[in-house]
Image (cartoon, rainbow, N blue to C red; front, side, top):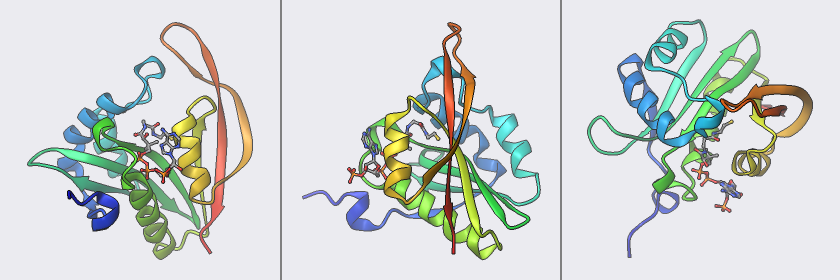
Length: 162
Ligand SMILES: CC(C)(COP(=O)(O)OP(=O)(O)OC[C@H]1O[C@@H](n2cnc3c(N)ncnc32)[C@H](O)[C@@H]1OP(=O)(O)O)[C@@H](O)C(=O)NCCC(=O)NCCS
């Protein structure tokens, strides 16, 4: 029987700006294109040059990522900026492992609380974050606008890292 990521403990490792193009490819294959949530390789590389920003990845084959999480931990607070898993590798615990590792690293860097924003209509992500102990702390109305002009609210989620 084939072992799943859950059995194997997904191999989460640090990524670098050299992974930015692979993160862009994975993002394009993962995010709902209507809401333009994917970042370009340039945006990812620039974010990684900012203070407190770090990338965690799960690697597939050479030059291929199965999942990633981009996080900023600064001045005692952390923000999960972006997280995605390739469609064919979902529901095997990769995002849970990536976000858990991001929380641990942010805590190590001195953050006491983590925040993130999720589209209200993104049921998979909302279930993921609920299962990881995040709770809604606010709504940003009409935060997302699709290419076709549909608007969607963002929900701000937060959890303590204590
Ligand atoms: C959201 C996303 C990152 C989840 O990745 P994943 O690796 O499949 O998540 P996990 O396997 O760790 O799921 C953990 C739990 O989250 C919940 N969950 C995840 N996907 C779900 C779905 N499609 N429907 C319902 N619950 C879901 C479940 O409780 C799941 O546990 P279970 O599989 O034991 O039921 C992935 O669907 C994705 O990349 N989506 C597109 C990008 C995106 O929306 N990113 C988040 C933006 S803030």
